[in-house]
Image (cartoon, rainbow, N blue to C red; front, side, top):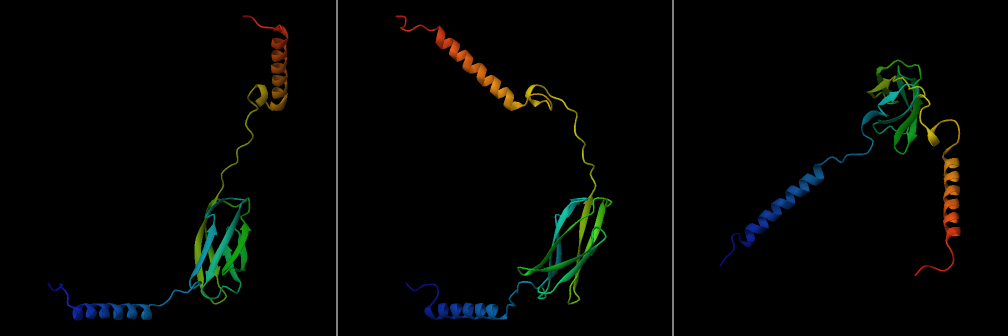
Length: 170
């Protein structure tokens, strides 16, 4: 009984698939690393007074320095590092909370931007000195309590051992 497709039809279908595959592979444009313009701020939400890391790309121009500016921290120069432009900066501790644009200016004229959110959460003061026993801030610490407790346990065990008489009950 002959198959559904003849040998000639099967070779035609396989040949057509081969031509389509060759066309797709030869006409696809390969993506090259570094061909995009971007700026990243990590973390993108930060407490005033904290440090942020900057990472950027300037197309195929990542071997040249770029400038980053923001009202959150001023001006920073990014330098080439493993195929990217990187740097870090500290947001001043007195910076008002809000969203600040971060702008990248590449040496080749390309630009990019992102946002940095500056938070100004008040830092809690020390809580009241509460607690008791070994957790109190003044007086004996946990180490002293453990030492006294250990000595008491040894004394109890020694006392019980001394009360036992040699020879046992039957």
